[in-house]
Length: 475
Image (cartoon, rainbow, N blue to C red):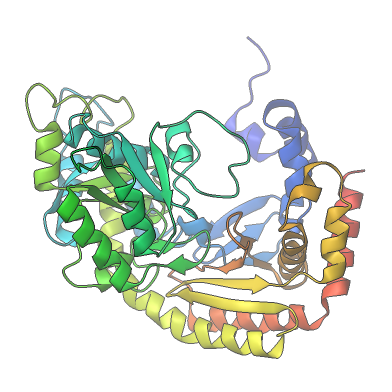
C-alpha cells in the first residue's frame, strides 16, 4: 500500500486540493453547494473561544455556536486540559468487562443536574442514537404490546433510518424505510395530541401509543411549546402510561436560559430526556438519554435484559469522551451557562427587534430565547417567480426565494464583516443567531451592528452579488 497521507500532509493541503479530494472521495455536490459561500472557499488555521482564524489571517466571529455544539466555545482551556491529562496519563479508553469510573461519575453528574428521578443514563455517540435509544426503551417498557409512537409535524430528531422517520422536517424529501407505527400531531396543539392518542384505541379502549417524542424548544424552526402544552402532555402521558420523551439535543446545557428548556417549569419531568451537542464540550462525540428510574428498571433492569441496551455496543462510554463530558458539565454549572445565555438575550433580543422594525421590508419576524434566535427574512415576489423558473427540484421548493435571500445575507456577513452565521433547513429557514455562551455583550453588539449594516445595503444588491458568486464558483 502506497500513497497514504500523514497528518502533516493533511495540514499542508491547499483549499483547491481539499476541494478536489472531497470531489473524489466525499461528495462533489457538497463542494458545489458549500463553495456558494465565502467560508466554503477558505480553510481554518485555528479556533479559540468565539472566533475562527483563517489561513489567510482573517479573524471571524463564529455566531453559529457550532450549530449547538460549541456553547463552551472553540477549544475551551478546561476541556483541552482534561483531554490532555487523560492522554498523558495513558488512561484506559474502553473495555466492556471493566467498570469505568468516568462513566459512573458522568452518569452521577447527569442525575445531579436533572430534576426528579431522571437518574438512569445511556451514553452513545450522537443525538440520533440517543433518540433511537429512548424510543427503543419506551417500546421495551411496554414489552412490545404497543406499536405507535407520536411525533410532531415540525420535529427534527436526526437522519438515521429510525430517527429520520421520527423527524417531521421538510428535509425529508426522500422516503426511506423507518420505524413502523409513527403517527403525527400538530406542534403545540394539545387537542391534536389527544386526537392522535384516541385514534389508536382498540375495541376495549386501550391506547396503542408507547412513546411521545417532542422538542420543548424546536431549534430548527425557532418555536417552542407553552407551559400549558407541556404540562398537558405530562398529564396525558401519565394517564395513558405513555413514555414522554423530551428531545433537548440542541437546547440542553443552558442555551435557552435554563439548564434544559423544560426546567424553567418547576415540577415538570419527562420520562426520558435526550442530550448531545454541547454535552461533549465541543470536543467529544457523545450523547445521552436519561430515563426516570422506574421506567428504566421496568424496561431493562433485569439479568435477562441487562445487555439489550446498556453494554451491547462497542462505541459506548469511551473513557476520554466521558472525561470530557464530566468537565463540560462542570464548566456549564460553575460558569453558570444559563445566566450567560440570559445575559446574551438581554442584548440580542432587543437588538434584533430593533433591526426588525428598521428593516420591516426584509425582516418578517424575530424570535428566540437565551442565545438561540431566528431572524426570518421575506422573499420579494420577483425572487419567488425566479424560483418557479429554476431548474430541477428547486422549482418545487416553496422556500426557494427565502433561502436565496437568507443565503445572500449570510454570505455578505461573512465576506464583508467576518461574521459566520447559518440558516436552518427546516420550517421557514430562518437565519440563526446562536452564539457560543462564551460570547461577550460587545461581540453580540458587533453582530447586531453588522447585520443592520448588511440589511441596509439592499436586498437586490445582496442577492445579485450572491447569485453571481454562485455562478462563478461553478466554473
